[in-house]
Image (cartoon, rainbow, N blue to C red; front, side, top):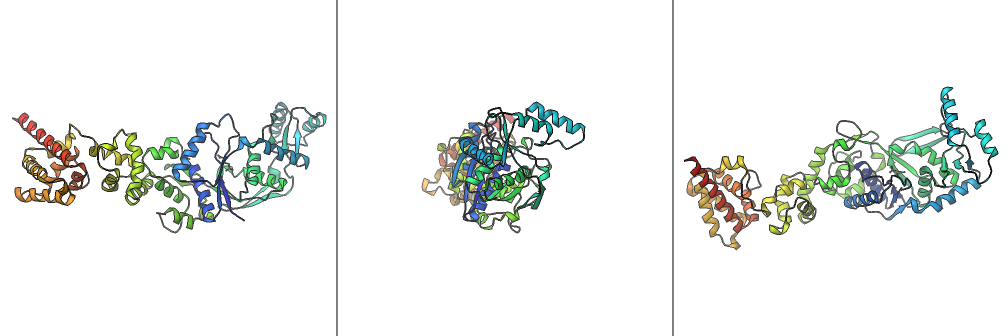
Length: 477
Ligand code: GLU
């Protein structure tokens, strides 16, 4: 039997991290088992479903690299099939038409509550029976599933273990509304059956639906899939993860400068583990993934850990690959990548110092754009009279370097030579040069920074720094 899993989002909003993690687990399990992964859009709630949300979900899945083998299927395209299945159950006597009006059901519920009974639908209630007996074919009605009255539903949840629910707690679910539309729990079962889904991996918010759905599978003569219900994701304060904790949509993580590899690695570990390993290549995730290792308890989102992973991937993934993602942030921040070094070189030099691509872009702007002012604090501290001689000497040595000599090693030697000739320490040369080169007091190694900035720009920037010092001295007199 080929393992087949699915991700079945309702397109009522963006793809949030909880959904993305469920999708990832389903995807990993299919891959681990040499199976297939299906994407199904559950858009029967037409009031709340939007094309925009469908697009956002597909964009999020694609960005995460969660490719699907089949689909996307759309439930709204399958109404005929659902109706066929409703008719099958009606013909088999496993479903029935109920003509009771909403008003009558409300009245009965109020009576049950007044009598301190459990409020539930009961086909044998005399008032309901009377209405149904008197009804004629063609009168408005819903179709209800005839849930078994005896026994219980037992299933072996792959995460939570054995679960047993007595049928006495389950009432006869509406499977087709008065307007002819099928209901959610019924569509899910018909879909999972038709699509050959063997493993349903989904959020624990669906656990109450599972016993009802199992009864419907059995009534239809379908084989019941294996279920795994994943616990929730909480914010760092222990409350259910929501917008007020910051980003919740997958694409917001892209916007905040995370690589898909980092988010994927973060999400896989959030509720699943393999020994104490923290970093997994996609191949390792696929190889080690097992439903039984998914945690039963809720997991708290930890942004610091996500940042740590992101830093790891910025440093270790191929720089050309990281550069492609960085490009998006350059355009987002309005930096023209044509006006400076190759992005991959910047990734190699600046990447290890940053946790996000947003920071990486921010900290790389000076390679691409000239500036006319220096960071005030850095300039006050490092562009002083004493820096004049080191900057002038460095300038003359830099001017003397030919373009083929424009290497990090040679620039390092320039700095050393200035130190030796002027008998000053490294800081007295390196820091003014850094402020001149970058406009600020912090950067990667200044020789490598100067190399990437380029000769013409460096000459111009050292001159700007010397002008600054000259003005400052003039003002001081
Ligand atoms: N459409 C449901 C949701 O978005 C998922 C249903 C399922 O996985 O069975 O929550």
